[in-house]
Length: 552
Ligand code: GLN
Image (cartoon, rainbow, N blue to C red; front, side, top):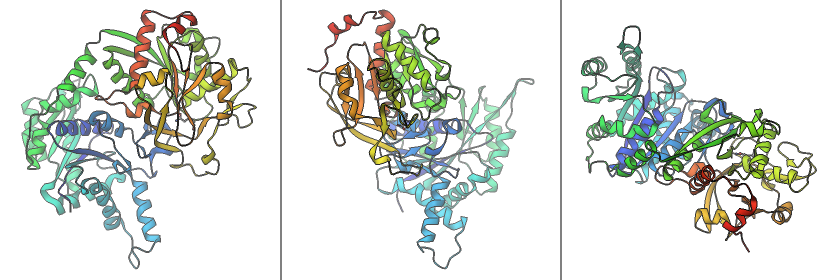
C-alpha cells in the first residue's frame, strides 16, 4: 500500500456547488506549501467517458495530453495547478463497470458471483490509488461527482468507507454543502446540511470538514451549531461565500485555513506558509485592468457557457497577461448571415470562431469569417473555427463555389476539409477521434512562429477532419499559408493569412493548455492584436505589408 494521503470531496444538498473549484483551490494551497498534489474526478454516469456527450449535457469535453476525453473540472485542475492530468484523473461508472465486465469475460473471477461489493468497489479503490502509487504525488484529492444520496454515487461512498476503514488516518473527507439564506426571515438555514451529513453517516462515512457554500457570512453561532449537529470541530466548518471570480477561491480558503486543518488532520507537516504571490499578482491584474477589449465568441452552444469553458478561461489568463479586461460577447452562429453580419459584429475588436461538430450554425461562422477577413478585424479560429476559415477562403477567394468539409457535405466538389485517412475505417464513436498531444513544427518567418517564439510545439487535438493538402499550393499562392505542420504526417495544424493584422486558425485546441501560470501565447497575442485594433483599426491591407513580412 502507498504512503500517499487521500482526500475525498463529496457534495451535499444540491449539485453545482463547485466541488471542482474547492478541490482545485485546496490542491493549489497544498501545492503552494510544497506538496505534490493531484486531483481526480469520479463521474457516476454510465458513459465510458464524456466524449460522446453533447456539450449541452455536461459542458465542454476537456482533453488531456494523453488523449483522454474528460470532464471539464479537469480543466480547472490544470489551470489552477499548472500540472497536466491524464486518463487516470477522470473515471466514470461506465469505465469501472467496463473493466470489471471485461475481467469477468476473461475468467478472472472464475467461479465467483461478480457483485457491486466487493468487485465494483475494489475497482473504484484501485483507481483511486493508481495516482498515489508510484510516489509522484503525496496527496491525491478525489472528487466524487453528483450529490450524496444519489443512487448512482452509492458505490463510490461505499468505497470511501472501505478505504477509511483500511487506511485510517491516511484518508480525509470534505463535504461541500449549501447553507441557504431565507430572505423572508433574513436567516441562514442549516437543516439541509444536517440532513446531508446524516445521509453520509447512514452510509458509514463521517465527514472531517464541512465547506459551506453560502451567500451570507456564517457567524460563530451558526458555525457552532453546524459543528454540533454534524460531529465536526468548529474550526472544520468552513465558509465558502459566493465569489466574484473562481480565482478568488484559493485565497478565500486560505483565510478559512482549509489547508492547515487538512494537513493537521492528516498529520502532515505544514511546511512553509503557502507561497501565493504569483496568484495574488494575477488576481490584482484581473481586478484592475488598464484597458478593455470586446471579443466575439462565435459558436452554436452559446446558451450554455460551460460548453466553451476553457476558451473563456484562456481569455481571462490572456487578458491578465495584457492587463486588459476581455469582455466576451457570446454570438450565436445560427443568427448570423451575410446581410446582418456587420450589425452582429459591430464594435467588436476581434472574433474567435469556436470548435464544434455538425452542420448547425456553419454558414453563420463562415459569414462572420468573411467579414473579419475583409475588414482586417483580428480573427482566431479553433478546430472547426479553423476549418471554417479554410472553407470561407476557398469559396470567396479561390473561387471554389460550394467548397466544404466532407463532414457537412460528403459530396462537395471541393473537399477542402476532409476525413483523415486513419479515420476512414473507424465506425465506433467513443474515444476514436485524433486525440491528445501531437507535435507541430512552425514555419519560420510566419506570425505563428513569432507568437510562440520557437520552432516546435506540442498541442492537444480532438477532431476527425483535417485540411486537405491537395489544395495547399492554391491557398499559399493566394496568401493563406500553412504556418504549422505535423512533422510525422504532414497534416496542416495551423493556417494564417499573410495580409491581415491577425488571422490564425489552429486545428488543435490551444485553450486546453492555458493556465494561470502559463497563459497560452496564441491567446495572449490575439488579445494584444485586438487591443491594437481597438486603438487603431487597420483599414487598408497595404499598411500591413510594411509591418509584417512572411516567409521567403
Ligand atoms: N468537427 C470537426 C472535426 O471533427 C472539428 C472538431 C472540433 O472542433 N473539435 O474535425
